[in-house]
Image 1 (cartoon, one colour):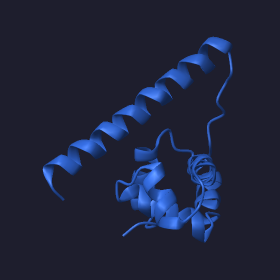
Image 2 (cartoon, rainbow, N blue to C red):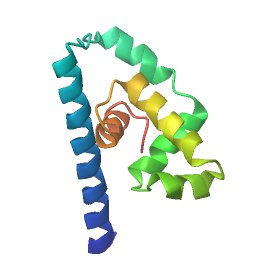
Image 3 (tube, helix red, strand yellow):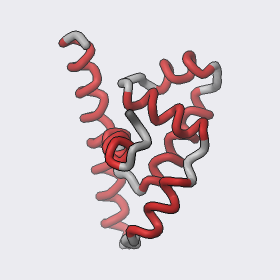
Length: 110
């Protein structure tokens, strides 16, 4: 992977982390409590990813943006966003980068 592409990927992940921080701050300010997940819940959720969600997670791990994933899978942007939201929820991930890390940790990604 060339240096330019690495910089683009890092910038994208930083943007996602900033957005997550804003969302988390709003939840804290509103008093919303996030319930901690037990390992058993996490394992069952990880196993529950659909084939399409795994495919999207692999493309995210490859550094593709949402529009690039749309073109790759020939689906709408809203469909990709929905898949990513469900992936983050199932993996209890804070960001796309966190989801990719969980995917590698649990052998979902090679």
